[in-house]
Image 1 (cartoon, rainbow, N blue to C red):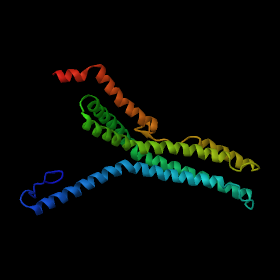
Image 2 (cartoon, one colour):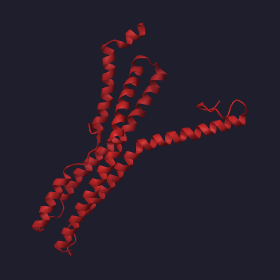
Image 3 (cartoon, rainbow, N blue to C red):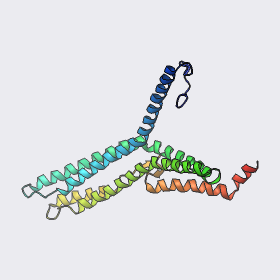
Image 4 (tube, helix red, strand yellow):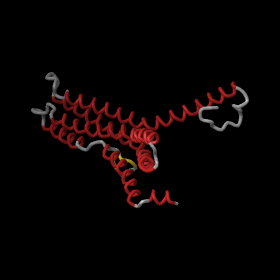
Length: 236
């Protein structure tokens, strides 16, 4: 029989071996496309954030090179600082654009993962035998891995912003003009506001939120256990 037995009203796989191979190939193509789309939904936000980290790292390296060339004039050094500020503004605009792409999707994903994780834990603690329990544990790791990379990269972006502010402070600004120093101070003030992402503008996307989702699922299990809901269901 076909691997997934999807409904196909046009080809009867029972009639011949050739039809069986045709139906199986069609099912593999359809499921491969669906799985690829799901994987893209899980990794596109990580890819955008990794690109954001690359730009932040490039900006940090440019800042470290400020006023290191003794042959450059003070005006050229100031122009280099202004270009760094323009690049930082461009990075912030990029962050604002990508924030709109996955804010609501991540919010829904957190809610669904929390609900499914709670149901899986209830099955694991109250109904599953050994082998079903092993499958539930593997499934739980798969659920948590959907949001873990994105939350981890978001925490790394916050660290990159802190490193950017420190690089500005430790740059070679001593002996510069007053205009250069005042501009640098304003730049440091702006970089001290880290780039953060929120899920549905409600809660931040970070490792702490990922842990809170797991805690919420365990709270559901504890509530069911204290209310003896499983025992009441089994009796009925």
